[in-house]
Length: 280
Image: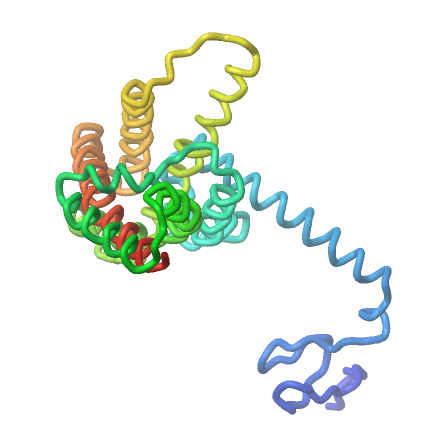
């Protein structure tokens, strides 16, 4: 029986295989034509990207805020088409945090490092060595430290993901034995935490002040509010993702959150100080 397929046979410019249609069956390379080089097509591609990006991004953000843990659950179960990739979401939020540093957040000033109980003396010694080597005054070193630390602290947030994923794995490996799934869950939690604590809350406080309303925004009271809300969110997320009972979810959340705070206070900040002071 003769084939009725009259489609032209193309040779892939990437892998040199023969195929029919617009895409190579072996490597997926597209067959480009004169239309692909037209300005009109460029605008069509831009429009498609923006609408496609906006739809996925908004769907993902809405899911993260209204259904804690659902993004991770769907993504790990293979439902991914409608969502922004969790790691891409995290990186985008970090970039937003870098561009709009409304809170000092994890980027502490030099004197705060010098007051740390764990490594304060080390910080003082290293600062003195920098002064001796460069001839800078204490004020100049403090200013330079702040400038370099502002960007470094944001990118260093990436180390939270593998560390906290390991904590999640240790706490719930009987429920889910796959480290990858715990990594995705941690990425969702971290994305929410950074977006809520360091972007949305500061933005709301700025708007409240701009409107002329009084507000008690001391560091302690604000920290308590963020901690309570984060624990509430984490409890719901753990219950949905792992299928824990409410009590078990709360226990997981408390342990996870305490581990996060300990890591940030005693490891992350020390690593940040060492990196930034070496850059001066």
